[in-house]
Structure formats: structure tokens, C-alpha cells
Length: 395
Image 1 (cartoon, rainbow, N blue to C red):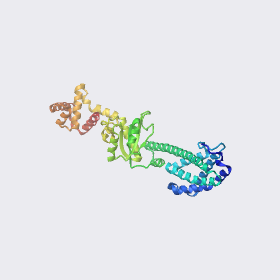
Image 2: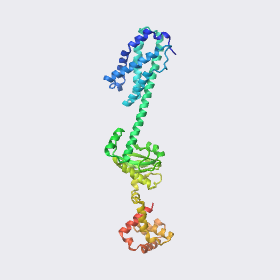
Image 3: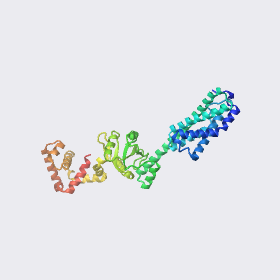
Image 4: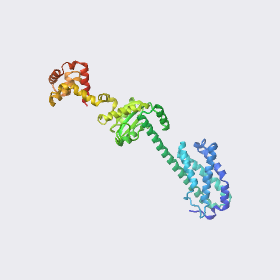
């Protein structure tokens, strides 16, 4: 509702306009006392700038209130609202919350109302108009508060996006093996405190968000197009801080059911090594143990044996050449017997139990193998080559 036309007679408006500098000074002084967050911020040069901003806001209000046709509290006053919006952004950059800023607005509204109403009454404003004047003041303050809140939220959103980009950039530098100086600089820019170690975890993109929810909040996530992967691989890499020792078992449990591959813990600047190990396990298609993730620390022998798939295939063909003359059935039985013999160090009962055959059957098959291999079954180098070839074939 608009106030009566005599609410702001020229002499009333002029009196309040003349008091704006003093009101702004008193408003800032009250905020400094009542809102501790601003005690330091509003001192010295900054305090004078804030006084000017308060004076601008109050001047905007008087412009609104004395407009021809009555005052409309919903009508925006551009410069004042722009200033309030900028104030909100600045407060977010300084690290202060909206709670502090809203408290400052409340104090400022009270002090400004107290002094401006006194001036208005002394200048001849009818007492009955004061209520409508108060409604205008506090509606205007609400507009300023809303503009500041919008600026504060926009700044947090934009700074949050910027920090996420910086963290992604840091993760990419770690995965590509950037020099230590570049990594330290990137960590500083991202406001990220380096841990002792980082552990690379590969998860399907669809499960990355769920995994992040149960991991250390300092965990880094790389962007798309990971080094060493095919385009469209639809995998995310997470770099988890300090997941070594006992913390590794907690990490593995947290990733249960997420189809993850977990690399080894490495000093944080050597995270590329952990990523390379996890990526290698993924490329070799190592299978998880039930719902547990693939823990590369428990699959080192597989990784070693499968490091060169072509060489392993050649080795297998070479060491099994004595069996080439056999049919598929007999050959398969002798291969599985030879593997069990190697893994159980020739203990016939254990070999028979693993193969679900009678110990005499094991003895008979081993006789066949000795006929085919001769003294090679007693030669350490030949036994090593057979163990490597058949141990890898086991999985």
C-alpha cells in the first residue's frame, strides 16, 4: 500500500537526505560492535567504503520513497541493488557466511530506522505515517538482503566450479606424471593439502558418485579422456588419500559391489604409478573375488605373469611341446596333473584330492609325464618355466 502524499513532503525528504552521512556512520559503528565478524573488516579505509555503500543504499531508498505517485516497495532501485549483490559476492570471497551479512542488515535496518524516523518526525512527518514509513524501510532492506544473498550464492557456485576444475586439473597432472614443482603449484592453486600417499581406484562412471560418497573427502576425481584409456571407456579414476596399511582394508570394503579396481598406495606425487597398475589390471581383465574389488596388491603374480601376453603364449607352447602328440582329452588330463604336481610340490595325496582322482591315478599320469619330459622334470630352470606357464593358465 502506498503512503499518503504528505508522508514525504519536500522538507521531510530534505531533512532525511541531509542526515544520510551521519546515519551511515552510526549504522557502520553499530554493526562493528554487534557483529564480531565485521570488527576488523570494517576498520580503516574499508569502513569508509562501507559507509559510502550504506549511504548509497539509504539514498536509493529515499529516491524510491519520494517518487511521484507514491512509494512502491517492490520497485527495484538499480544501483543500490547492484551494490548489495556485489557485497554478497565479496562476502563469499572473504569467507564470511550469509548469517553474518544478514545480521549486519538487521542491525543496520534498526539503526537506520531509529535515526531516520527521528529526523522525519522532527521535520514534520505526521505520527500516523510512521508505520507506513517503517513498512517501506523494512521492505527495502528485504530487497537488499535478497540481492546480497543472490550474490553470495552465485559467488560460492562459481568459486565451487572453479575449484572443481582446479582439482580435476591436479588429478590429470598426477595421472600424466607431471614434475613435482607443477604438482605442488597445482595443489596450492586448488587449495588441496597433499596427503602422504594416493591410491588410484578405477570405477565405472555410473558408480563414481556413489563411491565418492563413502571415500575420504579429499579424494580427487579425474575428468574424461583418462591417459592410457580408449575414448568412451566410461571409467572414472579416483585418487584416494592415505589408503595404505589398515586403511586399505577399509577402502576395499567400502568399494564392495562397485566393480572397482584398486591400485597400490604410492607417495602422492607418484600417483601415476598406482594408476598404471590399476589400469593394467583392468586391461588384463583380472576378475574380482565375488563382490570385492580387484585388489592389485593381492594379484601381483597375475600381473607379473601376464605382463607380456605374447611371450607367455610362446613360453606355454614351448614347455608343453612334449604333449603335442596327444589327443585333446589325454593332453588336458596330463596338463592339469602336471600343474597340480608343480603347485603341490609332488605330494601325491594333495594332488589326488585337488583332481578328485585316486592317488594311483596320479602315479600313473606322472609316469606318463616322466616318459615325455625325461630329466626336464628334475631341472630347476625347466620346472620354473613350467610353473610360470601353467600357473598363469590357471586363472
